[in-house]
Image (tube, rainbow, N blue to C red):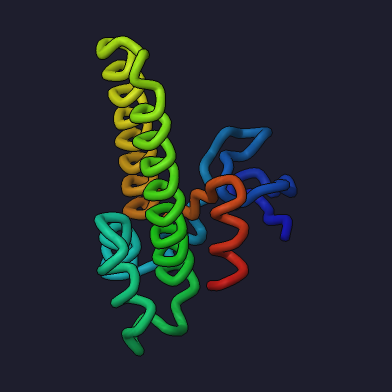
Length: 143
């Protein structure tokens, strides 16, 4: 659904991106959200437990923003758990890999997950919808 820039009026492809002409960010969605909605969406990324609770609470059942971030958090947790199990099995199966290389692989994987978690947390707290590939599309369908 295209949106228009509130500053210059040009039609935008994605309302989450800054305007292509003037560079101003579109804060229409973020300004409509209350602080508790943004906090709930950000808190959903701590573990899957708050996300599941937010999906069950009647206060957030009609709130698509909190529901989207809760579903994305749950799906991300499932995918990350599966990938961690695959990495653990792969490293155990290849015992001939030197310890330093295995430690480097695990460290880079953990650092990548931490950076992704921080980006999702900050974007949700800012009132922005940051869709992950595949997971975000599925979460949007569920929300």
